[in-house]
Length: 152
Length: 137
Image 1 (cartoon, rainbow over the protein chains, first blue to last red):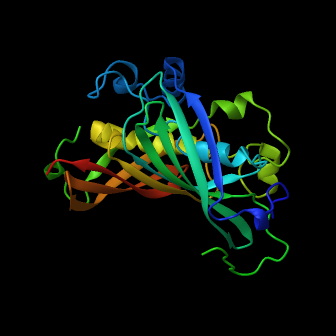
Image 2 (cartoon, chains in turn cyan, blue):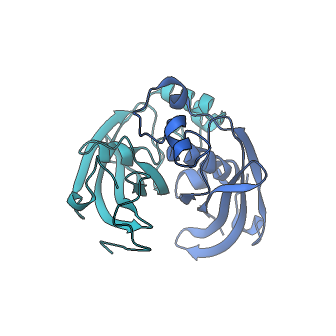
């Protein structure tokens, strides 16, 4: 069980964030370098006009930042990540991410929280809808039962 | 690049991608003693070493779809993936593959759904899921 995020205090419907950050050209260049994915749509031009931010940029990271804005999330682990790419993000724009806890459950003694979150840019353009399932840690609960689910 | 759903039959394979997995923060940052990004902690829990973050793996999975479908995945695409079998460690040779599993009409075109997965080592699947793009009919 998590000693940093008491499972019992997590509340379905609890809001998280917002968090905000800008995606600059250097961030995209670093992404392309780290992922070895120098797609010209990210670096030169795209069918959307200017280059765009890779759709999966921080996809599955912002939920940890949202959880971390309220709790100590350093020992958590992503297990499922889901995204719908509604519009491409533009380089240089600020992105605003808001989320909420939509479920929590225990499976094979591991505690999980489900976070749904929305990313919009500074102009209000919706960029991405996402849902992540996060394990609060890899330690099993002391009261581990074969399968016990909560919040569903 | 695929521009029409007619170019793809169920069972069509997407061109795979190959990488050596790399997450900069695993090299540059210090993590607390019970972080899944530490070798000693994860190895004590039965993993091969520090776990690569989900957002890094999502980037590799997404590349497969961008390469195949371009802007039709960047705007209107979807992805849902699960991390299994001990995850990925920095330096692992990984291959991302996909195969068309479904074509469903919806407003604006046909949604082409692909089963996608990542393999490491001798074909062990470490990421599994589905992704889709909306293409003209």
